[in-house]
Image (tube, rainbow, N blue to C red; front, side, top):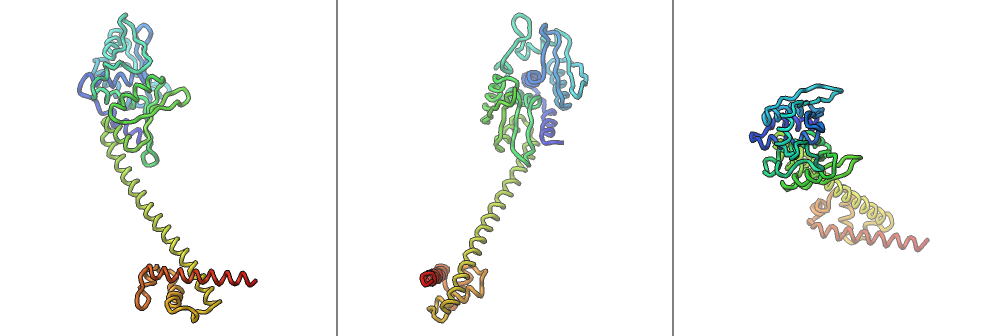
Length: 310
């Protein structure tokens, strides 16, 4: 089962105890997946996910005492309410029934009266995600989205999500308007808003492990870079020392330079501190670095003299 399916399965079991929250969530699912006949006699909803089907059934039964007919066609579940009195009762509760006794047409999702309370906003967002949302596997990436058919719907949903301090964005994808969140911490907050607490903890665990891996990798990369830098410097120092030995000889060097030159050749992989500790008496890192710099300058001078003589 995908992470997105796990989240929806958990949300399908989350039913608000208050009727106004049940109405808000049912309204979200209906507005995402449903339609009503022009005369208001038949309400239908086309839903693929079986968990969402069961959730919509429960909401209709608890909130409106209506049991829809359910049929399966081409892998899609068709939920149907054929009684005009039941349809009008549902739509009136959802504020989708006009004063002249007909279904109301709206560009956005729902009347603000249906989502006045924070709990109803949570329920509506949960229903919208169940009906038209998805979330990527957090092991691979952080991405949550809800697909809307109209720009007004995407705008209203973005506003509802923003009421909880979450910054959702919208993008046009073909003919759909997609509300999406890409920040890991914001997706965690979104799962909390929808009350998917198990999924929230699972995602947090993944985030912690990814952050730990990232920290370890950064440290390893840093240490590897330092090792490479040390090795490169040591190779350059040895090349200079060998050149001085072949062209000038160590016996022509001051005692301190001769000592550090021989120590470097004997310990090609040693750090500056290790080189300094091997000398008698021991020399600090700055002292070792100073002597090696002098050897580098001497090797450069010898090479320059050789080039001029050619």
